[in-house]
Length: 169
Ligand SMILES: [Fe+2]
Ligand SMILES: [Fe+2]
Image (tube, rainbow, N blue to C red; front, side, top):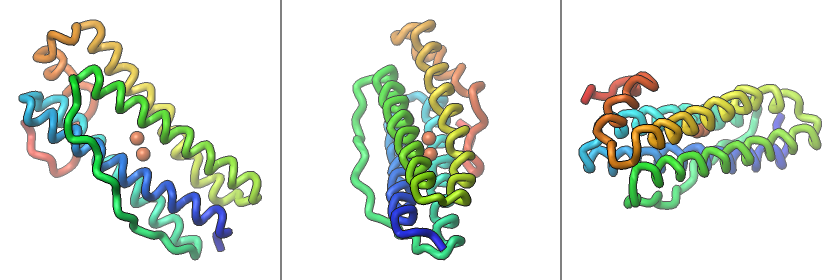
């Protein structure tokens, strides 16, 4: 049985992972309308991954006898000032999520909940990969130059596979 404090902070993460998915969807939609199908594809795939994280927390809370709550989400931004700025926002958001996961890890140690602590290890590793992937993207944008998005938009397709079920651009 999950302790209330652990259940509450895991439900907080349900909201944050769901919001992450919507944020990246909004970014994907913006990039798609700017004629950047590669970047849009990367972001759509990222949104799918965040939805999987969202589901992982929901299923875990319920599996341990808690009640996962599906929240209303705040509206993500729909305008971005450029591709560099967009990916800087992605990095900032992932750093926020890393801190958020670490806070849950801290609560599980305080509450001596070693099962949830174990469940979280996948997310701890995932966050290292997520932040590194976005840093790689920012480095590449820096290399090609922000004025050369045509090249970058083509190259980003090689950085990950598109999300399942997504139409190829
Ligand atoms: Fe996530
Ligand atoms: Fe993420």
